[in-house]
Each structure stands twice: as structure tokens, then as C-alpha cells.
Length: 172
Image (cartoon, rainbow, N blue to C red; front, side):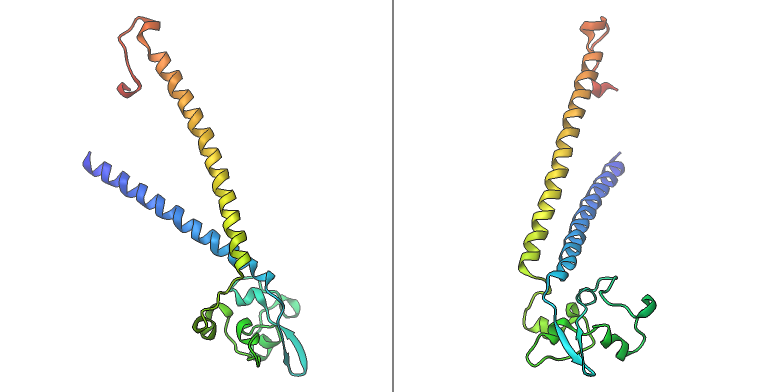
């Protein structure tokens, strides 16, 4: 019996940890998707103005720019022409073209600069609050329905109706 209780407690603890991890993943996804609100940054590459790929800089799987046929760049030169250079470094004065993502940028980290805009964080928090409110409303409905079922069960087991010895749902 004691082992079953400890296993149940462990499963409950793990479910709570899973819920917290899912919340963190939702927040990251919302922050990453906000990268399209960053201003467009361009630098000159071989006489051409090339836009920094904001989605690639956030580490998202679907970049803004692909080569013909949708294939991934194979060389450093192809990566540059697709805008795969650090957004943060390209926004410096003078602009620097470095082949790492903004989320990995050591200069950004040293400057203690965020990889997302403050308004994106505010929007993400608001969206997560809306999601939580919707979940709490569903739980309240479920609690109400569960309580109604419990009352019906108690009524059916009430001895005064049937003339049998009193049983409670705990006896089942």
C-alpha cells in the first residue's frame, strides 16, 4: 500500500513538472514567433542589399528565405545570400556580418540584450493568461459536473429511500 501511495505521489509530481515544461515551451514558442516584429536589417553582400533572416536568427525551423527549389544553403556564400548572419551583429555600427544566430550571439549576451522585443513578451504573457483562464473555466465546469454526480450517487445510496443499511460512496 505504501509503495502505491509513493508511486502515485511521484506520478503527480512528474505531471506537475510536465505541465511546467509545457508552459515554458509555449512561452518560448510565442517569443520566437514574435521575431517577425523585429525591424528589417540589411547589409551589403557583394554589392547587393541582403536582409537578415529573422526566423533563422531565432532558431526557428522555417527560415524566411530559401534558395531556388526550397533547398537549404550548402556554402557560406549561399548562407550569406539567404540572410543567414547574426541579426544583432548586423545592427551594430558599423555592421558586422557573422555566421551565427542572434540567439547564440556572444556580443548580444555581453551587452545583456534580449533576443525579443519587450512588447512581444507582454503579448506572450497576455496569451498565456488567456489560455490559463480558459483552462480554469473548463476545470470549474468539470468540478461542478463531478459534484453533481457525487450528489446523485449519495442520493441513490441513501438508506431512507430504499430501506437498506446506509452506505456511502466511501464504502464502494
